[in-house]
Length: 289
Image (tube, rainbow, N blue to C red):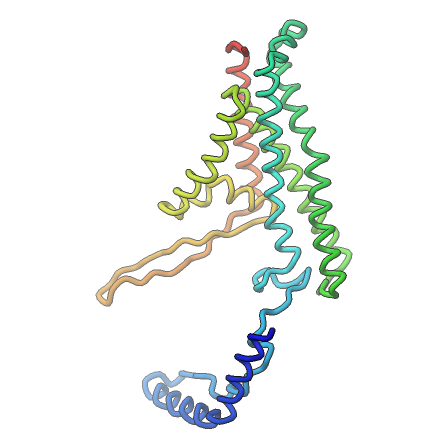
């Protein structure tokens, strides 16, 4: 605030001394431009003395314009909520690999030799087991954000419907966590070692998806992280530079593309289903030791 006030006072002093000159120069430039383009408008009539609020970062509200900066608190909650699925993949992977490495799974197969039933029971346990923790963590995240904005009187256009929107986000996060846990369980069954399974998952997100986003931006539509965000946030967007070349040179423009919530959910479901079926086939025939 102190720096903002210094800059504001400097600009205000400059405006008080040269403001009239700036307006006259703007009108002259506008008139000259209108000779070539009659509709040219430089906004000279909107010029005025600087205001202190122009030099200060606006304070966000909990509910507000999603495109605003800084982002509203509810938008931030929706964007951070997918991070809770990291816990789900950890539980899914470790739940299977721990039983394999300790021999517990091999011992259990002597009591229940039907491997398909065993695998699905373990995957279901991992899937359901993450839900209470993820839901509780989301309640703390959303409730804490609400409380912080409420204490500072910055709830914005908050209404009872907002609670429904927060609950919907939480429900989608819970579904995503369940699917991610099932995917983690499948990776654990396929690779049998927690380090290998988690290394593959982390490597995919950190390396593969980052490389794909950089080298083939148009492929972002099919990345896991894009579709995870689309599902939990109720839809998302990504940007691709589209360039055209003519006699004057190359012109690039960032074009926004949308990914629907439905696509995000279907891709997560498809990934979990494919890996789970593959894990079942392998688990039925491979030594678990």
